[in-house]
Length: 419
Image 1: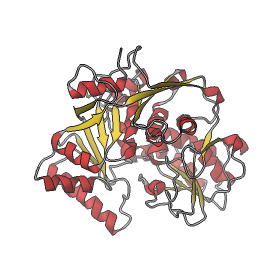
Image 2 (image 1 turned 30 degrees about the vertical axis):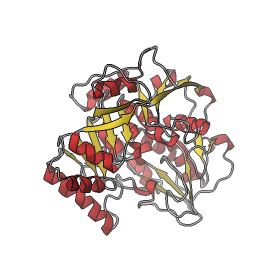
Image 3 (image 1 turned 120 degrees about the vertical axis):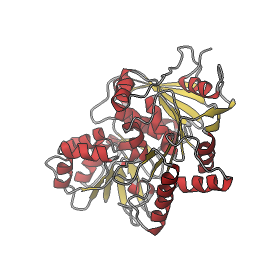
C-alpha cells in the first residue's frame, strides 16, 4: 500500500522508510513559527530550560501581528520580548512592524515555506502553509519552545481525508466558499486530528490564493493540517519567491484514505456561516434579511491581493451604506503596496471604507474593529464563535470578500448580484 503526501513527509523527517496513521514519531522540523501572543511563553520556557541558543537562527521565525502595532501597554511589552529575543539570538526572520504582515500570508510571500517541509507554529492557522505541499500544523507554546531548542517535535501520524472538487466555479464563488461548504457538511470536528487533502479539477484551476484560504481553515473542521499535492502552479509560485532547493512529494495513487468525499462544484453558491459556528453555513440565496453594522475584509484567510481585487471590483463607483463600517486589512506590507499601485486603496477610500495597516486586528477580538453589544459584522475571517470579535452579545457572519463588500454597500448580507 502506498502513502499519502503527509505520511511521506513525516516518514522522511523521522528518518523512516514508511509510517502509518496512529504511529508516534519524533521528526525534524524545518521552520518554527510564533507570534506576539505565543512566542513570549515559549521564550520564557526556553530561558527556564537553561539553553542559551536556538537550534538554528534562520529557522526560527517570529512575527508580531496579533496586537501589532501595539494597541496597549500589555501588547507593547509582549512585542518587546520578541524584539529583544530576536536581537539576542540574531534571528534572520524577525519581522518588525513596517516589514511584517500577518504571519500566514507573510511566510509564503517571503519564500519561507517549501514543498515537502514540516512547519510548526504556535498558532492554529499554521495549517495555511499546507497549500504549498508542506505538512504545517499548529502546536502549543511548549512544543515551540522545545523545537526552538532541539529542531525536533513529536507527532502522531494522522489519518488522511481526501476532498475532491470537480467542475467550474460559479460566479462569485471562491476557495473560501469551498472550505465553508466542507465545514458546513462535516462540522467543526468532522476531520478531527486528520489531514485534509484537497484535489480535483476545480482545485487544479484554483489560484494559489484560493488554495491558501482553503488550507487556512482546515483547523475549523478540526483538521491536523490541510494540504495540496504540489503542481506546476505551486512550483511556479515557489520559484518566484525563492531560489532555495527543495524536494516535493506527492500522494501515491494507491495511498489509503480514511475517507474520500467528492463534490460537484456546480452545486456550490457563495456561502455564509451564521453565528456562532463556521459549520452553521447557508448558501447566499437562503440568507434572508440580515442587517449588519460592520464588514471586515482581510485576515490570514482573505487578505491577499486577489481578495482585495475582488472587493475593489464590487466597490468601485459605490459608497458604503451609511449605517455600516467597512474595515479592510491588506495581509502584508507588500500586498498593501501592490493594492496602492493598482488603485485598489483609492477605490476603498472613495467608497468610504477604512484601510488598516497589516494586522490580525478584530479577527480575534484584538483591536481595529471590536464589536459592541448587539452589533453584527460580516467578515472574511475564519471564526465566528461567541465573543470572537468583541462583545459576547455581538454576532459574526463569515463569507468571501465579494459577499463582504456587497454587504457593506447593501447594509445587509447580500450578493454583488443585488447591486
